[in-house]
Amino acid sequence: MSALQRSLSPMLVPGLALLTAAFAQKTTGSLLTALAKHIPRPSGLHHFFLGNNGKIRTALGIVVALSLIRWANRFLNDMARNSWRASPPSDWICSKEIAVVTGGSGGIGRTVVEKLINKGLRVAVLDLKDPPEAFKEQARILFCKCNVTKPNEVAAVAEEIRTSIGHPTILINNAGICRPCRILDASAEKLYEIFSVNSLAHWLTVQQFLPDMIKNNKGHILTVASAASFLALPRCSDYSGSKSAARAFHDVLGSELKHFYHAPNVITTAVHTQFVRTPIIQDIQKRLDEEGQNILEADFVGEKIVERLVSKRGGVLILPESRSFLSGVAAWPAWMQEIVRDKYGRASAKRNE
Ligand SMILES: *[C@@H]1O[C@H](CO)[C@@H](O)[C@H](O)[C@H]1NC(C)=O
Image (tube, rainbow, N blue to C red; front, side, top):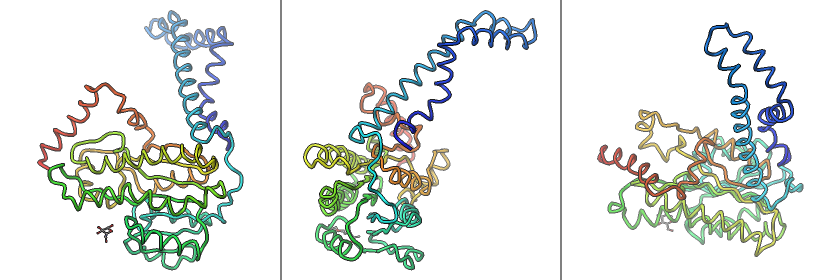
């Protein structure tokens, strides 16, 4: 599907409504009158339909105008994040691509690896944890035990991947850790570890695999950040901080590719999810369930990531989509931001965490 088709499809219903409202005012009017005829006479609804014909049309017009603005915004976002190209680069053949997934032994990473090999790709998994049994029999998976925070280990593993399966065209910086605690309780060791895994590792892997992507003007770098990169909450200063760094990394990477390396076909995507059912939230999962929080399934997130890779379009993926408004939190008035932080802060302090 081209960018235009993709952006147009959700516009079908409001678009038709607009055409009707704009060019067939009489028809809309008589339609409403006809509708009113079927409503029992003395009812208020009947009078409402007959008496507010014009108002109903105005309301319809407002809904349509808002949908149009939303559509234009989405369309421009999609184009801007893809070097104003309407169609994706054409030299991608799924079965020939090689992907690298950090943290691919579990959680979101594991589901992404499974889906990619099903599509015929070869995948190098970088993880400290052993891979699941099913991965061991898969010829398309190369498992590399690697501490992604160690420059020498990442370099050695990258060399192994290049010589044994070839130059990767897809890099998914997915490895991440989270252990919520207050600022005064965070040990130096823990701080270095979380920032190393959640952000610094992105520089290390990209330095290994990007040069070849630039040379061929072909590649896709996907950064798994978090909705926490938009909104820093109590007990998550280190997690939010490291994920905000990953978000900044994504923004700058895309810009440098365009202006310094002239490789517009190297695509970048950032993924920001809310809570996902993975070992990361193990400790707080029960509480989240009790609070009725919407926890995403790792498989759903993996599906969305792979969809994005296959579409060969870059951008920012916020999951669930209904939480896209979170990306604008920093622009909210301070009092609104404080209300949100207070709500979480109070609840967290009450639990005496
Ligand atoms: C990974 O490497 C860092 C040093 O870069 C070290 O502090 C950390 O303990 C290592 N992690 C594991 C699980 O071995």
